[in-house]
Length: 102
Image (cartoon, rainbow, N blue to C red):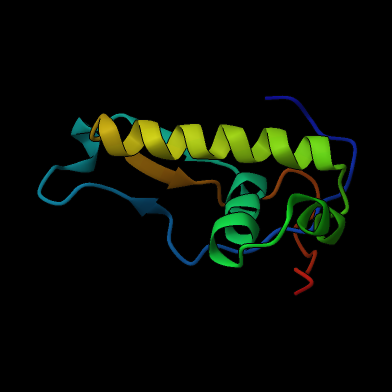
């Protein structure tokens, strides 16, 4: 995984894994979503923010935000259509205590 140089504001996820019902986790492949990827999905798909505005809130460039959003959506789609689990990274890449600005 590439270590990012820019500190990002990220949200905390209450759950660790989201998986299909009635299939044991040990039998599933999993897609790992980083806190950054969860945060871009949160801003884009839950709040419906424009990329420029959301990127500003996270303290990153719009192109970085767009790339993270594309990667996150691809992982979610893969997990849904291939019956995989979605694991949420429990540790942020750089800054554990950053607050999300809404």
